[in-house]
Amino acid sequence: MAVQFKTLMLKEYYDKFVAENIRPDGRSFKQFRRTTVNIGSITTANGSALVRVGNSTILCGIKAEFANPKLDSPDKGFVVPNVDLPSLCSCRFRPGPPSEQAQVCSQYLEDLIKNCHLVNLEDLCIARDKLAWVIYVDLLCLDYDGNVLDACVIAMLAALRSAKIPKVEIDEESEKPVVSKEESFTLNIQHCPISSTFALFDDSVILVDPTFEEEDLSSGCLTIAVNEDGELSDVLKSGGRSISDDELQDCIAVANKRGREISELLSKLC
Image (cartoon, rainbow, N blue to C red; front, side, top):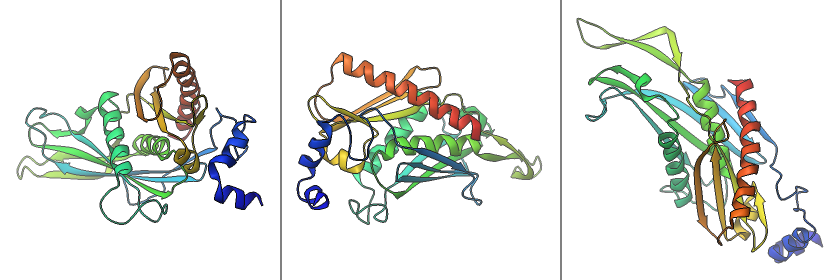
């Protein structure tokens, strides 16, 4: 009977649980799902990570390639993130061009990289005005169960921190790059911004780390990123009602706690 009730009247099903200050999966409103991180999942990549937040699963691969520096930044390289939400991860996505949600995720990661100065781009310069590294950060969703943005941020950080980039020298005679097969360097990750997403379920209830059902039933989402020092790195709000100052401060406090926990987890791995 409960299964039929949930299928036919999903909002009413959730309302009954929310009225008891609990969610259908047994979590409290401020409780995150179990998060696991594995690095080195792709042996052919320069760095990789597999992250699970609940059932949401993200695979991130790092690939380094040569590129010409920009004219206005001749001594810097590039970091280019891209999020793919294929039809295999959820029935909500269709084959074809990137969905709007995938584009929003990619843009958010790009903004986080730039605004937080995540990577020292000068370390990616090989020869000023001539050659630099471009670091492609490709994220593939294998299973979508809500809050994929937080999982993407964790996967990106874990993959970048574990990545090994070959050392390169320019041959004086041929002026061509010579890639070392033995020596490599790790990226200088200057900050560790961790995002926490909150679903605006109704006029008074905010749910942290929403599942895909909770996302569908909510009017909008709020994502807050804080670094390892507890400093606010980025805020993204998509739709939904307005948020009071008290609610915002409460969300920031939850995000700070989450940021410390994930930063400690990443420090143990890479």
